[in-house]
Image (cartoon, rainbow, N blue to C red; front, top):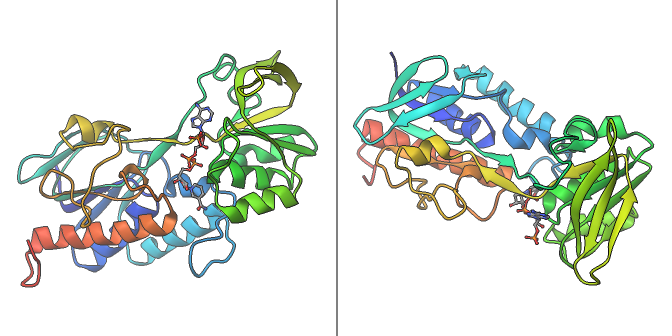
Length: 310
Ligand code: NAP
């Protein structure tokens, strides 16, 4: 079994930052990532609120973070899925599909997955017109008509991004107000994205690929079929907290990990950072800050420097 001071689960902005701070503090640090480094931030078409980068794609920003980690030789094991953890002892045990590891401290930075709509046709047409990532799939819809679903920042940014590619972009939101930031709402209107208020997607229809959606207006009670070529589902996130939960880490009603202001979970030596935590503000900047705090707390827990409050 490999033995480390600090193991970080997840290589999004929170995990990469924690890795950097762990290594630079002299901790024997390992980052384990199920896919490739970057996390959900890599799918963001446009980031305009990370200080120092007035306008940058998520991919570009995380590529710089990965490069930064490489410069300081942060070990990152990618394509390695965590399947189990034992966290309550002095030594924390992490089991992946490939092997077993132990560490004195663990930071869970495993992020979130996209929430699905759970309507008929969604899984049938996934990859045939149903997408969860505008950056990944937008190019397939050049000159076509697309519908984005959701009312948050992700939906707004995806619609803005797609308006540069598709001939027609509609945004369907189940309420009559968006929760997206004002700057994005203004841009949506400037770009003439048609917003379908009080609108719920009831079904996705097609043959070999998506051809239309069945939309229900929850104010008027009207249902109508609208022709589209693609649908981008952006209705929020579900946390990747299952192995942590099963190991006794406390989560809130939505499954997000509960942390205090020092990123400590309910288990000593176990920290969490980024979108997997119950923070209501899910931003790259917040994830980076939480990653720093978590790594510094892990350092204090392991090395017990004179200034560590315990
Ligand atoms: P979100 O802010 O949680 O918004 C999800 C949206 O989907 C809400 O408008 C919600 O409607 C709607 N929704 C949820 N379930 C639905 C369903 N079953 N059917 C139809 N609509 C549904 O999620 P997000 O936009 O993915 O963003 C996640 C987090 O990341 C947020 O904290 C967000 O601020 C952050 N983020 C930040 C940036 C940025 O600042 N650049 C970019 C992307 C994401 P209701 O409003 O009715 O609940």
